[in-house]
Image (cartoon, rainbow, N blue to C red; front, side):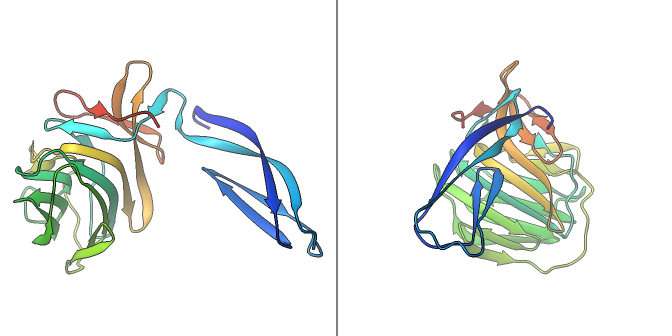
Length: 245
């Protein structure tokens, strides 16, 4: 279990209608109650025990978000391609400066790129060689739920851009909360919060990044519960963290 916390709890279930099969899902665990196909009793009561597996190892404390002051970022170790998808939620402390949310591209900032920025207070969606300024203007202290499904950008459940779907692969790793510049430097740092980030490669979840801090030294970062890797700040200074979850 890689040090993950396990708790076993009694779960009491009541049904007020005749049922033959009842499925219960709770947190990250699932349990199934199987009743006889002939069961017609009203007010059925069943007790079972479920094991809940916490998402992080015991050495880490999950928090509601990581907050960057404009010099911190995460290197995910993953190079994006035309089948990459990203799901994340962010909030900006201010929107006057250009800021990168995620970025993976080549030495040229406009080739083989899979990136999302705010530029001139609007979201800009970069896919392959296209750079598209969307109609969505950003506001400080506002949460944005982002789903970049390969070539399609959706923000707060509305599609804002559909780029031409075409084969490509970036040369440099995807950064979060900053953008790469020619693969040698960083720019466009995020000044705000990231609540979570999930990265998919051709619909396969390859990074499930949870904001947290390491209890032994209070080091903040993003813990990848897919690969059990703790990603910490690759820039200067340190992330701030939100309340414990």
